Length: 375
Image (tube, rainbow, N blue to C red):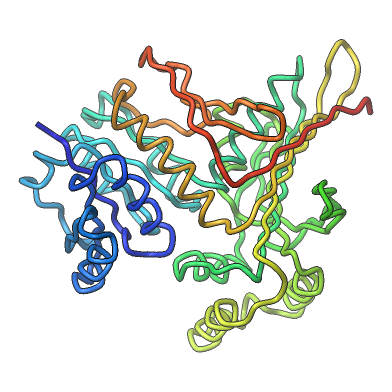
């Protein structure tokens, strides 16, 4: 009988929090896995042993005997190909991916349950962005009769503590070119271009955000059928945001292709603290309601982005562990919705995709607001 959960990258910044949350519910069944067994063992001891250690490198072939007892694998590391995910799904082991690489998630999304022999479910777009951004976009879209476009804006706190993988992903994509969908057609955009002034609400006020290759803008046109979706990024420090935008125009992408410069930038982002640990997400949905042009705004705010990523991931993982949908590849907005209660939110599984089970999981740590405006 399959009972175990393996979290690859489970002793990392986000993975360790996911392990603690899952281990509290299923002590002795959760394994913090990675290539460094010593670090996994140290983390296991810090939990009192209710999370177990395991050496497992993501790029190495999976031990098929391991999959006989593993019910669910959680991936907290960036990958280049889908071999590990396919191996899990073909052996009846569910797979959850906590990453933001649009290219990789698009590869997974193309897996066909019948053609690829899938025997379990994969759940993608799990965390803050993608994840809560997808769910906020879906919720805002439900208020409109017709949705023309969705703009997603993300503010991250440079005073927060970010994991190594997140720092590397951010730096590596400062000069990236990526695909977006506008008016139903694909086009190429570049990081830190296409600025937009965004009101994040609360006491954060307006900030300028720039395009960035979060995967939600690549998957939402497919899952929600929205003709235009864009995602932009800024930091809580306006000076830092402006500095990155200026450096980008002065040739930062070419500079970061040099390994030494790239590694220095990663260390600088990790070492220096500019601003606070606050994060915020704003979703603007534009369309028609009662025949009138409307703008629906949804916003959330909190501190420590890694915490809410782990909380969101743990919620969907626990639901998938107890009651999985039919074999296939899903994004979070295809199986879950957000349920507002005043300025609080809960993650709700309404029994979509044939599960027949409903679950409400409170997203402690975020504050929510919404408003509608006739354009």
